[in-house]
Image (cartoon, rainbow, N blue to C red; front, side, top):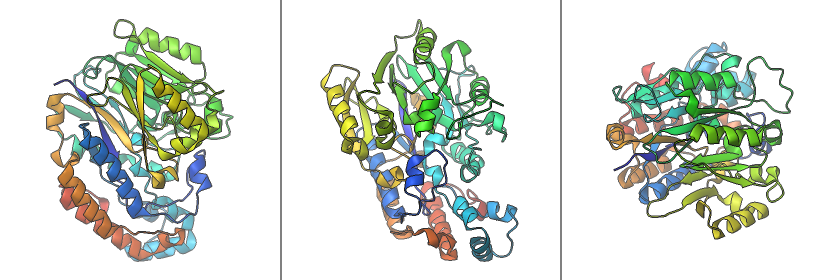
Length: 446
């Protein structure tokens, strides 16, 4: 049995809300203040996971983080009991409470950058958790993500989970949302593509932040022991960032030999494609599927999240399958493009539309919700069993979510100490379901 590309989805947390916290994420800003449905959100995510698992793909999950995150509020000077911290902080600094309550760890594409064992010098599967330092609400994720990865990939003989990069602007790192791997077959050597928005110290003049630095990409490649001849470092176009492509996976996705991207994705498109060809020389011939601006304007590509889709090798199908959000189907230009694409004889043969609207309203499509991990049969056998989705776990998690998650969460309810109690009860129960141990979350250790 050959190596397989697995998808590890972030489990949506009980404080899922529309805080509008990410500068440059247009969907997040547009939907700020809406009433969310944490229960609907987690069930949408579970349904997507089950669909892939039932189809025979390897599907895993990563647990939500503790939210609201009281250590942030305490470090900001709030004291007293946990309830007092929430109540006082809500009165004095409600914006900080919103940031401490964000359920953004659900977007596992930002959890880490992953290099398969076929690419690394020591033959281990490597993970570097993203430091996500550009935004405060995400900068608190790295260490808990590291703990989650160390739980799911606990065998240190096969897996290496690194520390996040230094928390300094030169090393701004957003994880696999800015990373693509192409290969002839998943178990063989591949080309790792790192996409950045700016260089360290650069006088950035864009409308929105360029969240990834080249230096962060290079540091991850070195620490993973990659062959730099098989690495490509590409600059994302400012036009894409200014249009709202805050991560490269909003305008580009790839797997196997195929790179599916928008015409405006890269700063120097011709040079980018040539660099990929040179890095792949002797291994495979890359397949480029370029979506022209004239057919799908970049604004439509971003609002529909055409590229923030999962591009998958589907069991018993000769061509790749694109798992796209319903918004792609509902946008005229992207629907027409997908219809024409699958009618041809290219590498993408089918598009399947899924409903993840709770995530989409915060700017995260199907690809945001998952972290890709290439696993050999031996590595798959070494993954913590409770991190892998199956029918029994799906049923358990549906009951768990229906029991512990609110159906509706209004913005002004983030200051309710009862939400803290409910969230902790949910995470305590999840700890037992997933066998996370009795000290997985900070509140459990306290």
